[in-house]
Image 1 (cartoon, rainbow, N blue to C red):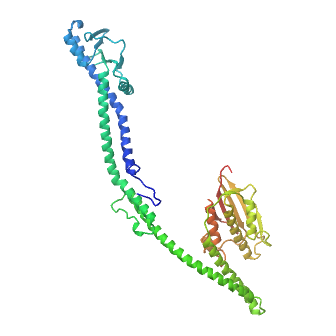
Image 2 (cartoon, rainbow, N blue to C red):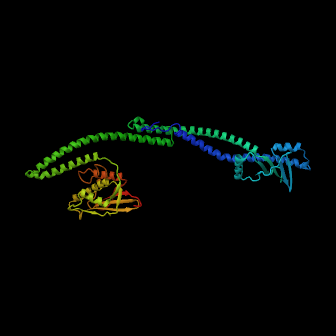
Image 3 (tube, helix red, strand yellow):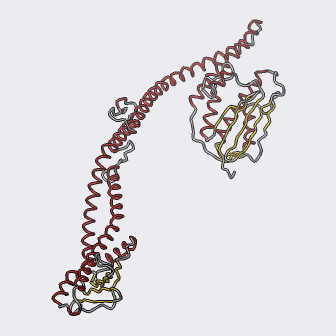
Length: 477
């Protein structure tokens, strides 16, 4: 399976199926290893107990003879050979008796295997030691055989046969473990393949195909009607998402075509309005009283129409460039923005910059400047529209810093925003607070703030309008 950029997905080794069956087999082998050592310890203990039982038989033989030393070798040697022992010692009531193979040399030291201590950890450690280090040692097996009463029996024998039997047992366990792991992994894999992996492969193939050609409606996945599990929910959600995306792309293409046509019409309309504005300027110079009375209204109407057409063209040409963050002194940028928005030096409106010199943000200065200019321009136009009805018209820029966040405030003491503008705030062509406005300024401002990781909101106030610009800042800042 290939992605759109040519990268290969999955493969016989990197695919999900191979990883799943490998993981299952590995986990089963780990479980088998965890079970193997206790099993090996039990096998060794049983093997040694069998030798002690033969020692118990020897005890009963010894009890039947008045003097153990009188037993002929024809009886003792076969008994010892059946146990694989060099000698058998039994102790009872302070008495010790020994029977050994004729001509056998007793070792100077032997490795103790005390079967009276059945601690599982010790049994496992002894079994591991025998498997790894045994083979040429002499074992001294000590224990109480069944039916021997209080007699303690010791069997001296080489541990080579024990280690050989343990190796054979380990090989059988290993082969059985591999078979169990393989069969179990295959069974689980077949079930997982049909219930999980195959649907995931189907979803993956569909997503890649739809990604390569999202305008092809036939590639929208059809949910399996026979499933009612989480995969079915995922398939249905994917189908709904693809259908919405398909419709959205079609609508976007139509809007793009329509927007291109509107832009061309708007461009020609602006040129015609500009020509009409030139003519109206000439008409306004005539001495006719009616012309003098109507000309200003005509000029203002043409100015608004040209401004509307120009703002639409600017919005359509706007490029959402990536922000280029750098340290920005907000106080200095505030003064620059006020000058560009016509607030600095305004004959009536006062600009109050309360931002401290220590307020520095890491963001794109051009983006923040455009946001402040838009907000300040809107505030200035709102105050100019009331024409002296507001006492001490003022636009205020302030800031506050809290852990992890810096908030800027742009406030005015004007009439505030009308209800319609609040309902459609930040919506292009609908969020304007004045007649003939486009509402593009706030829409663009919010896009720029969001692009720099911030948030632009309108605060609830009793007078005027106050916008808050929240930007994340390092807690150490």
